[in-house]
Image (spheres, helix red, strand yellow):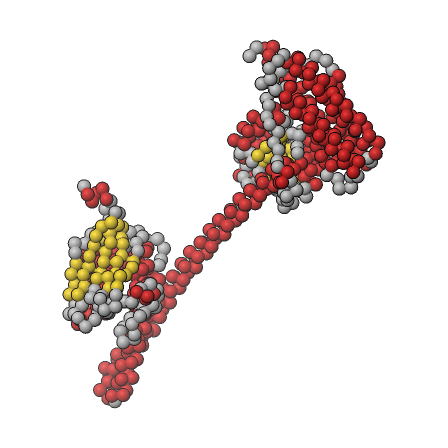
Length: 527
Ligand code: ADP
């Protein structure tokens, strides 16, 4: 591009900017005056005439100053002059008539329109403006059906714009929509205010002397405290590229001058609504985090309480049991049959209570915090469990077999307890036949499925979920138990990342399954 054409570009760009600013004021102020509810019919018709003609002039400016248009720039400007002369004339005479009739604040607005008309008139009457380049962009419009339906909750907004008339118009449009606006004329002032006060949204002019709108936007986006505050850029038509860049830099939206009050409202509404939804979402996440923390703490407290209580309860219970034993040794032979029966009930009760306390302790321990898992050989764990159950195995004549068992990721003591509870139940809930128990294992992906199968009394399908809940006992008090064994198993399996379930039919035995993670990876295993 030559030096001469740069000068032409600058000159035409400057002309376009000047004309559009003037039209922004005519359209903006006539729009504001039209929103006055007390305006009489004649005033409304006249204002509408001003507003519509200003829009016609704007479209002619966009057309004739468009760089895409063929033809000599000087010729285009001359045609533009001719074409806007007539509507401008009508505007000026209507404004004169309005100035005769309106008073107070409304008269002031009419005078503002008149001042903007002078700017256009100077152009129409002045010869010799240089042609140049103006970037076109369509004026955004919103459908009639949307108008009047946009209602935002009152918000506090900051307007940063160096043009006093723009500030005034924006302020009044915002107040008219029920918002509270603070208007400042420079980016520096806006940034200062943003550090001290809270705003729901910022309306920021793209082109400002000193700190530009883009710089202000970048600084706002670097302030963590302002992360949730939406920024809407205000741009002239030939600045939409900068406005688009601002969106990339984190602006929420942009508005093109002259402001259509309905469009302004719609954009504000949508930005404020998005901000509200984001805040709601953040609040919900915070609540969820708080609730999770509370739950975690409550769980830890409960576990600490359960384990302390279990320890403390065992102590006096041991005293009761020991005293009963001593008593039995010393005076057992002197007791009547009835007294001995009462004595036996007391000893049984103490034993059951002791079992309940240690199960409660195991249940609370199994639900504790994170545990380091390590590779454990299932066979070793099973053998230890069988050893612990040797008395009941001997008494029942149970036969226990197992397949080749893998190494899984677990806590060794917990895996022993898991086998002990499952094999113990398989013996306890036996049928007429001698207990025949088999422990199997097969691999599925990165998991092992282990099974404990028995030939016992079986479980009706409708109870198969209940038995995993604490105290979910199905069988009567003739069989010892606290109803916590399977609940403990379920916690142990779940904490190691697995699942526990049962398949059973009454009279046909039961198979309990649980999954456990492989101690070695798939690749290692097949290598
Ligand atoms: P407990 O054995 O102390 O009653 P558990 O939690 O271990 O408690 O078991 C809950 C209930 O599940 C038992 O009361 C019993 O009714 C049923 N159950 C558990 N294992 C078996 C099994 N292998 N066969 C039949 N019923 C079983």
